[in-house]
Length: 174
Image (spheres, rainbow, N blue to C red):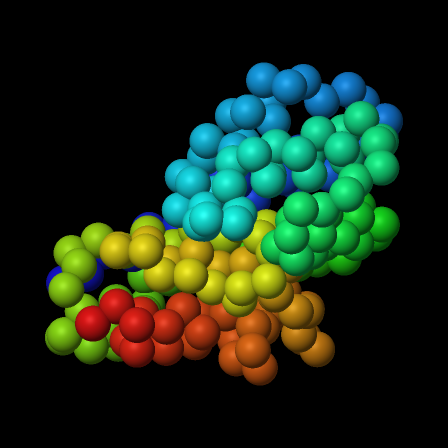
């Protein structure tokens, strides 16, 4: 039976980053480098979106410098971070249900054709894509999560987050 593991490392780091910037604290370059090397971000990199893209965005935010994006993905990542820092109440309302999400109940509903014994689900603040599948990793863009009408409920593409995860695994990881 497939094991599902949530990986919120990058999301937790960004939660700290947003709160620190809101409180006007100094963010070290070492912290930014460590974030760019986190597995959730590393798996998202492609030809136009690299660790340097993430470093440039986070550095500009941390140093309160103007930012000129090299491409649409960088620009969206920057504007998404600004949006999140604008109202940390929304960020906390989105973050709490993600942190409390228990994906264990999905194991029985995974189709038998899924070829991975372990699937890691990363929730990462990304750019344009709603999600990305890389081998046995599912990356979900935190910025695409929407608050539901009920407290502690979040949705993505009009599906409850756990339903979105299950559908993506069953459709794209076979």
